[in-house]
Image (cartoon, rainbow, N blue to C red; front, side):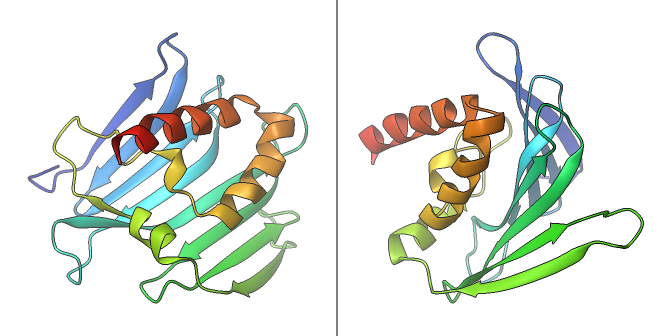
Length: 172
């Protein structure tokens, strides 16, 4: 990706189960966090910006909520962040493919300076993606909403989050 070429990679858990898929494309990194069936339930979108040379900014987090016990999507929540530290959510629910869904936009108060700083990450070297896949960089309000869903449908997420918190709090 240093050459701005498109490529894809899949990161596995220690037991060989899928953890996330990564797409790199000319200053953009997309991450899809995966369940055992390779269905994504959470996505991160990073982009490079001239205001922060050598860095990527986590500008979007998407949570996909499915019908219990299935991969059938019921709603999607987009958490969008900007350089002014404000953020908004877009909730899509209903029939997304036939155009009868509704969209609810909510603007939120700014995130803290600490939370904003975790949205910025050094541009990674090839194969070094630990900093991109850190779940502890999710701002608190979004994290709480994600946990509300994943605790019911994908409890391993809380374990992954706790692992990242313990790992990276020791090194900071």
